[in-house]
Image 1 (spheres, helix red, strand yellow):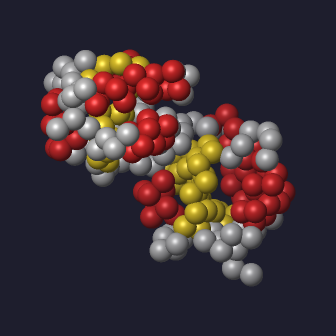
Image 2 (cartoon, rainbow, N blue to C red):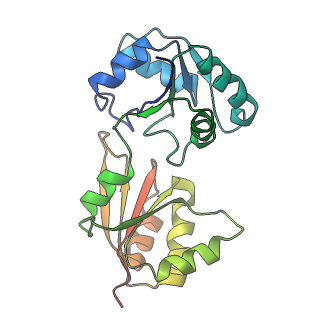
Length: 224
């Protein structure tokens, strides 16, 4: 049966993929990949020879109608991002939305995503949490952070290494010096690391140690 399969891919360690994901990647007619060069490494590792096409934020609006029609015509399509689960701070939402609109089956496999291991290893409550992805770079940034200052749930953010210090500083200015948080980097890789402390201490730490690798920031809830 033709449908859209959403396939989580490893966030670092290539072993972090399910048997089912490998099987489906071998069985589908085409794999839509955020970066075909990056996905090729994973496919080669598991002996997967399925044809790939690029599908990323710069071409998804142009391609979505065509892909939907191809699935309706009988193609089985898998969507992957560079790392983690499609549509979680990655392309995918638009295609998923259009497939649902056209009554096309959408099947999302369970698998890797950076936010869950970062949350669990933070030691903060995980029964209720707020995932914000990447903060806006400019417009709406201060308002978003101000809203998070009052959040009663554990907060999870993604950040790039070159913007980490600015984000920690901005959080410190609005939320305060003493709010506890963690920064996890290089999750599942050889140099995986989680740094713990209040916002003031983490800002000092990363001022003295250049951030490397993709970052997940976990911030404790407002308990006041």
